[in-house]
Length: 104
Image 1: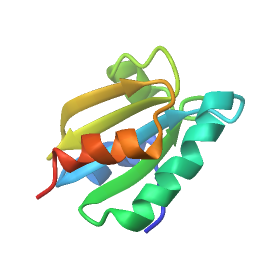
Image 2: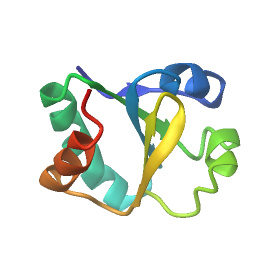
Image 3: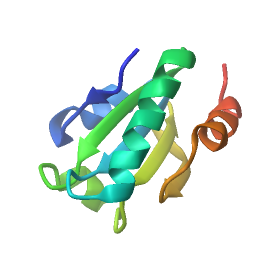
């Protein structure tokens, strides 16, 4: 799997079912650029989670709706409901442990 880039218009559809993790990021953000390869690596290892990312400069509706004030912010959702919110860089082991709580 890879991390799919989504937009405001497709966010709810993309995260409505199952477990998803959305990376709210921006191209100018250093910690965001560190977070991306971690999510890419995890997306290859974890099948039961959908990995998506949203550029906050190009999409403002969803980040505003979720009150995203700092990036990177990772939202973990189960069937469209936010179950966990993480701000700042998280390493692969940390994210794997958190996502394991929502395994099917």
